[in-house]
Structure formats: structure tokens, C-alpha cells
Length: 564
Image (tube, rainbow, N blue to C red; front, top):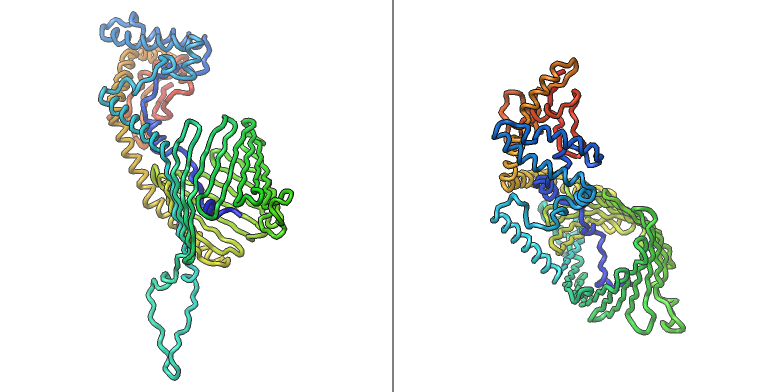
């Protein structure tokens, strides 16, 4: 059997990374976008050479300096025309276009900058220092990684047991009246049944080698023990890695693991574990292969305790027997699943698990096991991210004959606290129901009353922060847009006259661009800072009584009016 100090039982949801944090997504969305050469030419990313050439000629009619007689407009046109020429130079060249499509404008420049050009030297220094500080933190974390866990198992079966032992008085003495119990008296029946603690440190020994040293201890009903162990992990090649672990105290356990990937679609893992040199090690071999794009099948064989030509003695009375397991595991962005069937001499089981990712950095986990040794067990749990480095989780496990157990968990920066509470040692439907309803109710209340308002506040503060950080850039972009409109006033007026003469002509009455959500505008409204009037631009884009804005570029979905 496995050493409980090496492999403590923990059915809580693992610390897998979920989707990107909402604030990170928001920062990416609101960050200044790189120059869009396709947008400048008003063509799609799949435009042909002929379409690109036609779009360039059309823009030349609008923005070529020779097309403007007023000196102010001529200077504005010169700057705009240089941008148009640059975009046409890149998009019309097959080689440059391929580089731009793959690496963006930075690929064309073939160099990296600390920050965008619109930032001031002070802002660039701050950004550089922030990146350097983050890099130092990552280097420090990779130098020594600390992991810890504290698990307190509480036996609360007495809390839900109404039985009270009778109070006997002396012979011939009147019966003592029962003492008055307070409303929280039942909670005093809860007892600390088990304490488990472990901690480990991981550090880099070489380019391909890491070492882990850790310790663990367990105390149960006043009795317990502990151990100290060390692990060395080494990457032998891109396809093969191995690790060796040994405990330093009794019981002595030595294990060697190997991980081999013959190809990108297959793997073979093996574990050899021994407690004594007087018997062969217990071997476990798992071989798997990708069956479909997101589905992997595997088979696991475990020898149990065995003998080889007398080495190992008589194993007929030993309880660790061989077993074979077949399993399928898979997953996509929204969730994952696994199914395993194991058959063995001592125990067999069928296990099913499903994990579903939920909004707001949460996930739901459902699992069930039917075993010849452990009976029937089912569990449901959830996991929530409350901050960048903190997660909370809770789960309900119930089974026959294992009983009902509720588990709470908090993890932060590699440190974890787990609180399993045993509600009943036998299956109790009522306890199982309340054991599920109460944690779910707490989770919903915390999410609605604490986490959701906190998220709204953080998003609001982040938007304000990003607006302040990018205010100079946004103002410059807005000024560029207004200058571009100024150059298109005459063209738009000419288009209006042409369209008014047609029977089904298109005249743009009003068009706005910006954040129009929850905003009511009319012709007399004063526009907010994040909205601009683009009626002139849209009218200039009218050709043959139609407006064409290729896909892939930002455009307004409401706020436009037409007059035929």
C-alpha cells in the first residue's frame, strides 16, 4: 500500500488554471491597438491585389495633398497620405504582407520596444521597472518554490446525533433535573479527529535538474508520525524525464518514476516503489495514446506485491494484489471528463468525473465511484477565484457505507488549508441534502453579495485607470479622426448632392462612433468624450448608394440614419 505520508488522500478540486482573469482581459481589450493597415485602406484581410489597388486609388482622391487648395488642409493631407502610403507599401507587397499578418507591425520593424511610442520617458521607465520587478519575482519563485498544506479533519457526527446519556444520581437520591443547554451546545460535540501537515521546497540544481525536499506529519486520535523526503527530477531528453524520491525516516520508501513520450500523441509512464530490498519493487506502468483531438485513452497495470524466483518470499497472504485499469480522459475549453474501469484481485471499481468551467473564474466538479472495497461514493464540488492569487473551494462527498463529508478549502500562493467535516459515518439523505444546500447557498450569497460587487468595483476602477494611462494616446487618436473628417467635408458634401439627385440615393443624417451602450443621443445632444460624430466619414464612404465597411474592423452597430 502507498505511504499515507507520501500520498495523503485529497479529493478536492486541483489548482488548475482557469480562463484569463476578467481584469487581464479588460486590460487587453482597452489597451491601445497597433496600427491596422487593412483598416487604413478600408479593405478586408483577405482582399485581393486588385481590391487593395482600387482602395488605394480611392483614398488618393480623398487625401492626396494636390487635391486640397487650402494650406491648412494640404498640411493635414500630407501627414494622412504618408500613413496611407505606408499601409499600401506593406499590404501590396506579398512578403511584407505575410510578415505583417503573422507578427504585426513589430515584425516589420524587427525590433522590440519597452513601451509604445506614445508613452512619455517617465511612463516607459515605470513600465520597464514593473517588467523587471515581475521578472525578478518569477526568477525568485523559480529559484525556490514553496508548497504547503494543512488539513484539519473535524468529526461532527455528535453535533447531529440527538442522543444524550442519562444523568444518574446516587441510590435513593432524587433524579437530577437536566441542565439547560445553550443554542450552541451541540457544537461542543465536534472533535478534531485528524491533523495532517506537509511542506516542501523546490529549487533548481541545473539547467535540466530540480530538487524537492519536504516533510509531512499526521496525528490521529492522539497518535501519529511523520517523515522527511527528498526528490530529484531530471530531464534526460525532450522525450524522457525521470525522478527519484526517498524518505529519510522510518518507514523507508524509495520510488523511481519515468515519463516517456514516444510521439506527440502517446506516452508511457512507470513507477517503481519499494520499502525493502528483500522483495521486488511494486511496479505501475501506464501507456496512453490520443484517440481524438481532445480525447486520450490509457491502460494501467499494477503488479502489487510479487516475488521473483523466491525473491519476495510467499506473497499469497499479502493484501496488495495486482490490478488492471482502462480509462478515457478528455476535455475542451469549457470542461473536462474522465472514465476509468479497474479490475483487480482485491478491489475493482468504476470511476467517473466531470469538471465544468463556469463564469467568473469558477468551476464545478462532479464525480462518482462504485467500488467492491469502498462501496458507492459520489461527490459534487465548486471552486472559485476570489483574487489573483487566492482560491476557495467546497465539496460534498457522500457514500455507502462511507457516510457524509463536507470539505472546505482555501489556497493562496502555493499554501493550502483544507477543512474536511465528517457529518455522519453512515449515509444520511437529510444530511446529504443540507450538506449540499448550505454550502451552495453560502457560495451563492458570497458571490452575489461580496464577489460580484467587488468585481464591478474593480472593473470600474480598472477602466478609469486605463483611461488615465491612455488619455494622451486617445486624445491624439481622436484629433487624428477629426482632422481626417475635416479633409473629407467637401467630398461628403459632393456625395450628398449626388445622392439627393437619385431616386433611391443614400444620405447619412447622423452617425456616431464610440461606446454607445446605455447612451441616448439625438442631433442636438452634446457628445461625451468617448463618442465622436462620423457622419461625414460614413457619407464619404457611400458609393452607388451603399456603404461598405469590410469585416474585421471596428464599426458602429447603431446610431446611423439614412435618407433615401
